[in-house]
Image (cartoon, rainbow, N blue to C red):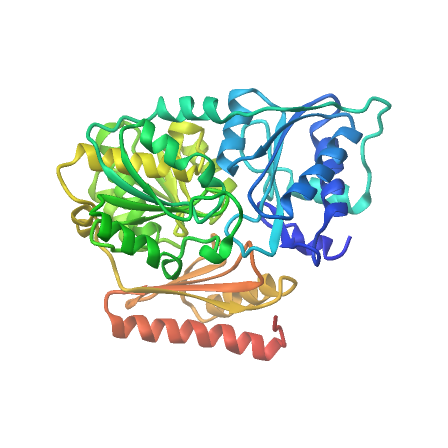
Length: 457
């Protein structure tokens, strides 16, 4: 299996279809995951809208059944839906065929344990990877069975039991022709919203916009929100584990620095649980805001499984990432973007303020985020070298995930991307001049280390 070591990432398996992985990979992953969960277990499978997903799911299923697992095929779903099915139906695990927000030519596999959480680093990914590489699969004379189920209505009932929208809102939805097209409009209409939808066909026609929910991809949504005089616009990434929000003026709420604060404020006002978990890439303003609302901020490593595990450890009510993954204890810690959209609508329905007014109440510092290409084989080594250099130079650092450096002017974070061959740099400061200086300093550190070591993508 080509590039087999590189496609195993911190919390999923991901690569370019036809180059890094193919149907043979899918069968091996199925056999390995089936070996990992055990014989005669029940495993769910699903896929997003990518054209390569159907063939990958078919061979994945063959791999699972060949080692004695019974498979429930939910076909096209969202990643959070599949996680919720695992919990609500007490499955032994599941595999989602998706590359989430990555470009259309990518695909991959998210492995879900019986708790509905990802098999990430430290939670089985290393073991599953080794089973694939060694090809040491379970042997059985009993082939597993395959059944097909449609769990959409069960999912709707479950989600709506956790949401209470108290007044009629006008909402514009942009699923980006991803998996949210299956269900988002229907579920928002069920809670009484007036819904306008664009890019609402689950056909993987990503030229409508990229699978991600970055601001550059959302010009059509911004325009439609203003034209329709809507209360809010909501965009979803391809597999619906990330949401982006547009206010009534067409303004993009941006990173989790804003959305985490809004949800934290709401949950802290209604729940005795005081802890809010967020990743190290978030602004110091998030920590300050949570404290100002009587909450206890908990800073954690970037990544789905790492945030959820910390939420469980801390008994936290809510968690989030800078990248707008938003985690809700109401639904087993899932980062369900449809649920995030519904809860944001709930917040609007209960507060006598427009979304732009709520956003204005959140403090923020000037910030920037950049990616510098670096091969998957070398990116962690480069970051480790930079960390050692900064330690030796006496800087105040946090080495929770990569290296975050605190100075009198602000802070910057250098970390290896978990999903792409790149090093991520984020920086913040109290003013634009200090931000430029910090960002330039950090970028030079990365470039110097790349030049010194010859580590280029």
